Amino acid sequence: FSKFSHEFQTISGAGEDTIYVDENKGIAINKEVYNDEVIESLGLSKETLVENRAVEVGNIFTLGTRFSDALNLKYQTETGESKSVFMGSYGIGPGRLMGTVVEVLSDSKGIIWPESIAPFKVHLLALGEDENIRNEASELYKNLIEKDIEVLFDDRHEINAGEKFADADLIGIPYRVVVSKRSMSEGGYEIKKRTEEGGKIVTKEQLLSELKNV
Image (cartoon, rainbow, N blue to C red; front, side):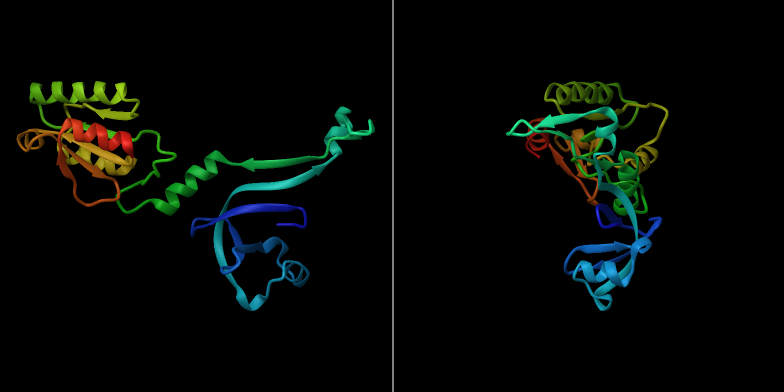
């Protein structure tokens, strides 16, 4: 961005910045400082720079001794000399980052949270009005919590299966686990990654082992 600051940008059509990227070197220049002097100082060439829209999700820039001088914030060197602390700012915008993840990784159905930052690992769905199914799902919920697996439990009775599936896709939790008459008749629960089209039926032991080892 300028001689003494760096922005961390994610390419996205929803971005408010225009940047020029050298895709081989992984370096970009913000349009605000896009000129021959900056291009030359970075060892780049206009011929290799590609224009993109991007979102700034973080930045680093120097503050020098402006604030440490004002606060009389000093340190002693090995020789006992007193010097002002040289400061820098290392910023990341959580709100911007979340918005960027949604823009870049979502599909037509909704959000796709990476597991590393997802609010939950598992979205547990209990389907139907059968009391045995609801009890089975509640017990599985307790088992997941006991295993320190973060889980969002959709135990709503008034919502049909299609609406629950649509909500699960919209929210975008990495794994969807369904407890239903069909899954129980086939030997357990259906587990499906948000990024997959179809799921598979597993036993409780297989489910807990798979989720714990991911």
